[in-house]
Length: 430
Image (cartoon, rainbow, N blue to C red):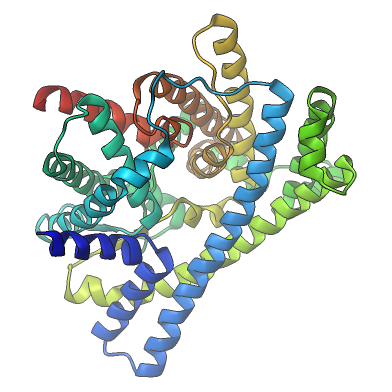
């Protein structure tokens, strides 16, 4: 039994938890099944892996800047989240129960593939590896919060079944919207922002006009440069960083000086905007390269192994379809979250911190869906909805999770829904 667990952990950590490896293997198998020449198979596999690494490199660069931004906001507001007494920190949860999460991820993925193979209605293969890991960890944290005495078999069994079902149905229920955005069935959406994205897509038509897309906005000639998403990102986020740096320097000069290092804080803040823009360019370039190779490669799997299978991948896959909407969604979500943060603190309800990564990626992706049916107003609404859900979800989850409580500050919209569902399920089981 120990040997099997070790094998499952190895697969979880070294394959499923490594996006470039997982998707490289998928591409390789797909091309082999199509009996492509060795050189074509090698090129296709390597280009998929390079595309994934470029996408992750852009995302990581953006995340680094978001972390700096979050530090500025924290310095400017002077708030930090309040955790339950005697909670188990996330690092301790990972060190003690990380092996459970790795096994859950592996078993759930195997069950997911079986479900996709035997149920004709579901044909999306969930390939967002890093979210598989985080959701597996969330399942462990919720189970232990409800029942600290749960056995390894109970934690792994319940977690594997719940996540296998979620990974199977999530890309399916949003695919009609994904098809509308991409114009084909070639690729699916596998991300824990799906609920906000789906709601934004369906409500967008009641909020705005799809003809007024963020990518077609009529701007005065003097502002026409904002139509270039890279330039608009650099300028808008650069200005926000400068403003946050100024306020932060007044309230917490040591923090700002530490972030800026030897640079003048204003110069440092301006450069952050440039880095934001560079990250977006790298990310989108990687997405285009990755998608361009994985779609034809996956045909072998959809023809020979899982008839009609569709690869479902990470949120940035929709960014190229409306890159300006991504920034709009992030900004509107940030504004709503900061508003809710102030209201919660004033009411004594909760102290929450802006989760910049979750405000950007889920908010930006949801804005692409909202923009498709509601134009720029739909994009603004989508980002705002994401900010609202993240604020409420974080406030409530911070009070509930006693294991890995920091997960509440890292959650996407679907995380919070899964936590509620799993809590109810576990209340019946235990």
